[in-house]
Amino acid sequence: MVPVCWLLVQLLQLVQLVAAGKYPSFQVAMNDIDFVAPDVAYVGDSLCDCRAKCLVQEQCTAATYEKLSSTCSLSYASQCETEVQNKTGVVGLFKYDTVIRDVFITKTRTSNGSLANQQRLCRAEGGEPLVIKTKQVRDKALQLVLAFGTSNGQMPELVAWISAYNYGTAYVWPNGKPISNCASASGDLNAFHNADGPAAMLSSDNIIVRTAVTKAFSYPVLCHRY
Ligand SMILES: *[C@@H]1O[C@H](CO)[C@@H](O)[C@H](O)[C@H]1NC(C)=O
Ligand SMILES: *[C@@H]1O[C@H](CO)[C@@H](O)[C@H](O)[C@H]1NC(C)=O
Image 1 (tube, rainbow, N blue to C red):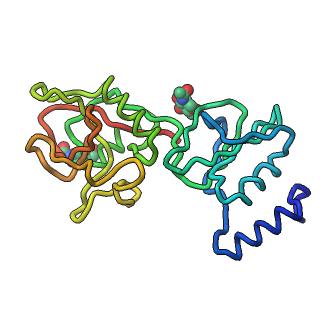
Image 2: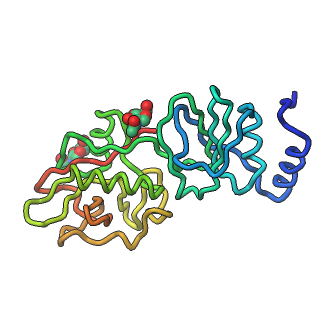
Image 3: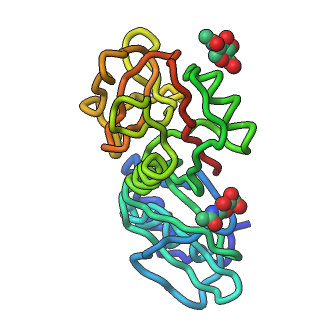
């Protein structure tokens, strides 16, 4: 059965988008999350109306819906720019899987920057090794490095392990995606004080540095929770 909220006009627009090879859908749904600054908000919609409004607008990248106030908010920000925050009772629907709710840095430090070891440390504190996909996430990661990163005792920079890794041909994130995206670039990959290697760290001067997997000093690990 076709939901009541799928107005004919919206269906027609959707059909046009599908015909144009731009079939829109949501990749991720999350509870208790909202935009920092929505582009437009409608009061009185159902969740179904809200979904439909975002699906038929190509420039809409995400929708959030607050059941209590029947408020539908849409974001036209690019997947790199979407900024979110926790908000109880709000459901978020995202056309891209770039949104991360929470970035944290491990309390435990390690001299072993292998991905397996980063996973072990992040999982022990309830997360996964951080993948940077948005400016908001990179900014948060940088704040954490400035506050809790460690230095090797000789260099002024503070650093923390990050999950980008070179498997022989190029640096990739653990999901296999190239390091270059809207919030990080291969230009970020400077060698760290003659200690080059396949692992990576984020430094307090906001550079993703190439570095050896095994270090003489111990550093925390950047992680995220969805
Ligand atoms: C947001 O919610 C997540 C999941 O419930 C939680 O882990 C995180 O600490 C919260 N972040 C803030 C800033 O409150
Ligand atoms: C680094 O950590 C991983 C996973 O914990 C472990 O398998 C590996 O042997 C460690 N490497 C060194 C050099 O300690």
